[in-house]
Length: 228
Image (cartoon, rainbow, N blue to C red; front, side, top):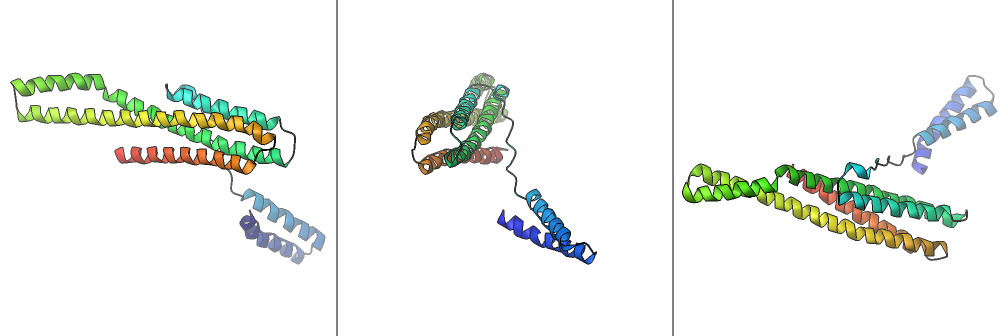
């Protein structure tokens, strides 16, 4: 904010000088310069990124339930904060609750990635691949040929890729389940903080969870890009 202020102060000064040269009184010129400089400063302050629209019903299970559970935890924390008396502690807790919302956003992004992994596995049709593999294995015994061997290798490669996707989705789902336990713990701890527990420790715990979720999502993004 200080950088933005210093950037637009000269503009306000310039406007004031120009108005003085034009013959306007100094109170009017100075007032206009301050108003314009302040307006430009506010307009150019960095804005918080718009949050994604979260709709759990656009993804399948088990991903939907993880998003819904995270939504419930975030909503409960905000309710706890709203019930607090006005003051510095409530302001601090509001900031922490907003930070947990970042974790909810990451949970949503991770769940969508997981849903995409499941969809990719479904498109590859493991059952059909398994049947195709059995057929080709039989043909390789009765009618061995280069074409059959090539087709067999291709199907085996597709099955291996499918298994990797399944494992990746499973590990992601397991980690999301563990993070939900931490969501629940943070909601309970919020009550302790409202009664005088250390807000710094609580803020660090929230931030640790969000950073972990961000790391999970980035890792999934990198793997997805590598596979594409």
